[in-house]
Structure formats: C-alpha cells, structure tokens
Image (tube, rainbow over all chains, first blue to last red; front, side):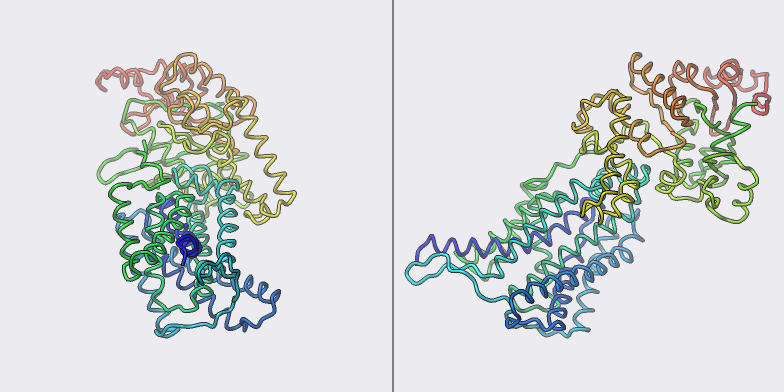
Length: 310
Length: 301
C-alpha cells in the first residue's frame, strides 16, 4: 500500500465530509453574523432535513435501480422538497423561539435554542422512532483513480455529487450575498440593524430569511448525509451540528468564506486523524481544534476582529 | 401665513416622552412646514434627539400624536384616523408615525434620518450604501430576488434606476470618484455628505438630520448649507434638523423651534427667535424670572 495512494484516498474522503460540514456551518455563521447568537438548534435542523430527504426518497421510490436520468431528476426533486420543508422548520424555530426574545438579555435566545434542539430531537424520535434508519445505497459506482499494491484509490459518484453540489451552492450563495439586494440588506443588518431599519428595511423579515437560507443549505447537507452514509437517526444533528459550529468558529464566525474553509478543514482533520492516528478519538481531535481556535485564534482564520461600534 | 401653519408636512402634538421618572419631553407641539428647512435648537439635554427618535420610531412616545401629511395637510382625515385607530389614510397621504414601526416610517411615511454619530455601513462600498437605501424598490423590481436570479428585464430596469439615482446623489456630494471605496475609508466630511445622500436615496419627503454640521470645518459647513438648500429648492424636500452651529441654523432655516428641558420655549422665523429673550436666557443661563417677554406670543403669532 503506497503512502501517496492512502493519502489521496483520505483527502477525497475528507473533502467530502468537509463539504457537508461547510454547508451546515454557513447556517451558524450567517445567523451569528446577523443577530449575534449561536443557533444551537441548527444541527437538529440538519437532522430534520435528512429525515425529510429520507422520507422523500422512500415516497418517490428512488433506488439504485432507477434509470440514470430519472434518478438525477428524482434527486433534484428530493433536494428541493427537503430544502423547502426544512426551511419552513428553520423559519418556525426563529419565529417562535428567538424573535419574541429579541431585545432580551443575550443568554435568553441561547437557552431557547438549546430547548428547540431538544424539542426537535424528541419530536423526530417520537414521530419517526428511535431506531436508526438504514437506507439501501442509491447512488452507486465510482471511479478508480490509481492503484498500487492492491490498494485502489476510489472516488465514488456520491462523493463527486456532494463536492460538486457544494461548490455550486456555495458559489450561488456567495453571489446572493454579495450581489443581490437581499444580500446587501443582510449585510446591512449585520453591521447596524437599527440603521438598516431606518432605511426602510424590514429587519425581522431579513432575519427570518437568513434562517430560511441556513436551513435550506443544512437540508442539502442532510440529504447528502443520507445518501453518503446510508443511515441516520434522530441524534445525528448533535455531533454534526457541534462540528459545523467548530468549523464556523475556526473559519471566523460571521464570515461566509470562513465557514466554507472551516468546514473543509474540520472534515480533513477528522478524516486524517482517523486514518493516521485513532478513529476512536476523531471527535476529540475536532473539538480540540475548537478549543485551540477559541484560545489562540478567537476571531478565526478569516474573521474580522470584533470592531467596537461607536 | 407661515407654511408651518398653513400646510405642515409634519405635526407633533402634545408629545410627551418619559423614561421612568425622567421627563425628556413634556407636552411638546410644533409643526414642520412643507418645503421648509426647520431647525430644532436648544442647549444640551434639551430633548432634541429624543424628538427625532420619536418621529423616526426609535422610541414609542409616552403620549401625543405625530402625523405626516405626504401631499397635503388634512386635519379632518387626521382626526378620523386618530379616532378610528388606523395608521394611515386609504390614499396614504396622512400617516400616524406614533403607530408605526421604524422601517415602515422610512418606507411608507418616507421619513429619512441621519445620526449625530455617523452610521454608515463601513464595510460596504459607497455605492452599496446607496443601494441599501433603495432596498425596497429593488426587491419589488426583482420580485423578491426570484426575478433577479433569472435576470428579468424589470429587474434590470430597477437596477439601472437605482444606479442612476445613486450616481446622481454621488455627483451632488462630489464623491462619484470614490463610489467603489469602502465607506469607512472616506474622510469625515465626506462620510457626513454620504449619509445625507444615502438618506436621499430612500426617496424621502421629510429629511431629518441630527447635527449634520458637527465636526465640519467652515468650508464644509458652507457646502452643507448649499446642499441642504439644493435639496429643499430642487427636490422640494422638507428638512428638519438639529444643529448647534448657529451660523448654519440662522443662515438656512425658514423656521426654528427652541427647546429647553423638554419644553418648547420659542417657535418662529429665524429673526424672531434670535431676538426672543427666552432663547437668549436659555443659552446664556439667565434666571427665568429675569425674562420679561413671554415666548407664547411668538408661538401663536
């Protein structure tokens, strides 16, 4: 087994995992940017997204036997359904748990966020059952990139889909934030919500839309998670959520490119740690990064240091 | 008759604002004439900024009525709306600001405001600052972003209009060359001008400026006067401003309201206010008993 080949394989796996983390991390970073709170329920929104995706896959009867073009079409439909329904969940969480507390002390929405996280978990646990939900592989096949001493470096079709879809979504999302009026309004609210309001921007609606967007991206991550790992349960949101949060902090919370970079790094660190050191301690590795980032790099890799508002 | 009596764009009646036990504004009434430059002056802590905060929806007044008449003052409709508990008349001419949240005051009542301390979006470019001010128009034109994504022609027209408006105001404030620079990089005086341009890009009928001349040098002050006159004369916008710089106030104001300790002590044209003994007393700190002429004469005359 060649070192280069092994390394390449881990790199492919790490980038795939990092893409999923990155998609979730955007939701954390955007919400933090606009209202300065950590939405601890976001990981569970991702979990809800994966369940919606799974149910949609089952209802549409998608399987590995589905013809190629139909499969692509079905996947797009599943992603669209998951995005739409999960976005409603994200919107609802903000509406009932965070908006009434706006202007309250800073800890209040954090506490309700944890409450919403538990609520979502319990809701899914009760309505869908506590057992893990396996799903047959739907997207199969892949390409062998290189081979040495019997070790084959493979990139599977689902990995390609995940990475390509993530790149497309992130490019689209970056354009949305930097070029459209909606994105400008979000950035304006981020800098000075009061002033944005005085220019006629409906700040509450802008915040709602931020939650909707974050939830929609998390839903895509959820569907990808189902397709990649083939098994989900009501608890996956916790670990994935905390890791995506770590990614957002590492990249610089509040920074969009930071969330993408952080997600990629956490995915790579976790994968390489599992591959070269110990798979049992992969979560420890990820969270050690969180601690190190918080101590030595509190504003993250791409974050701006907190500027005092005058 | 004065414009602030014959056709006021803004009427503030019996406005009271209490913070706990502190009475910041006590039963204040005044009007702003359509097409006038109106100044609110008074010593520090007189409640000037509080008035602004009530007008623009930052504070909910404890008591009182604040109404705007976008096209024509109409006392009858105003009374009907007040009694009926409505926010605005069907034709959107009369709006009760004390009943509206701040973004609606900016969007529907078309009141724009600047702050004593500059509140530009520093991380955004000069042009983006002016685009943010046109958010509602752009959102409508882009069918709430959906149309924008598909590049519909209506969106492109909306975008062109917004760019045109932004360019126009950048030319007026002489910042067209710096359109793509971050707003925070501009010198102080330019940031002040940009704030006014941004407020104008919202398409206001009433422009509220909180100490626009603060920190400006005499040349910049003079330019500001020219800009404010231009806004009033060429665009017919009514201007309400708080200012400490008496040079600016006396030179450009059509109408001056003087506050002291949350109460109105004088109200009238510049010449009247300048010679009002109550005003002189408030500014120089003379005891009230030494003042002979009551200011109420001016208020009603």
